[in-house]
Image (tube, rainbow, N blue to C red; front, side):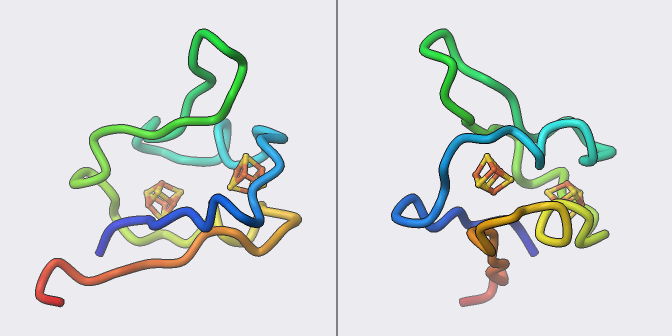
Length: 63
Ligand code: SF4
Ligand code: SF4
């Protein structure tokens, strides 16, 4: 599984950044939340639970 951000919902609040044990989320140079290395996702669900906008969903690599 890997995280998929609904950019129509994301407010770039950054709540997802500190909770991810794999440091997948970060602020880019413009101060906007971005993510990388999503293959490292362990599916712990902490990011989606932390997101106040319900903007994080998950997709399977098999899809
Ligand atoms: S917690 Fe949700 S709204 Fe905030 S930056 Fe992350 S995905 Fe966007
Ligand atoms: S499910 Fe866990 S490991 Fe995957 S992106 Fe969210 S916080 Fe990070």
